[in-house]
Image 1 (cartoon, rainbow, N blue to C red):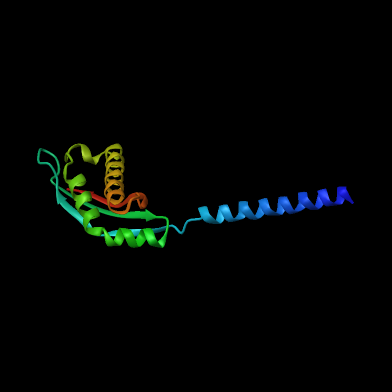
Image 2: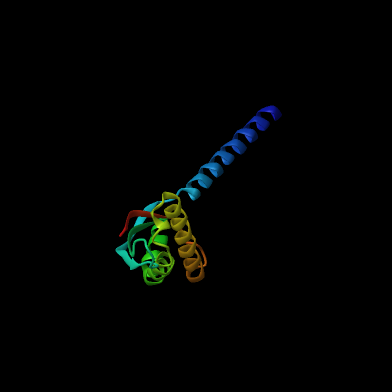
Length: 135
């Protein structure tokens, strides 16, 4: 009888752990979506012998509908941050893939910083350029 109670206790404990692990997995589940930062960014870049205009289309990856709404609510601040980050580029070097990826990373960090100041958290999971034209 004592051994049967022990097995029952072990069974109940393992069932409780399974439920706790399942709930933890559900808590980490995210509802990913993309928010377009539109219209496209069209701006002048540093003058020199290289290109003078840059057009960038970008999208922000968010992990929940609430984060998506926060991005939409702060779109003016996000666009300002993107314009300031993008317009400070050299037309000659911006054509390389490595420079574009560095620029994307800089823009992502700048946007996360602004959103952290406004929301108390970075809000976006990532920032992606979906179109990049230099002329």
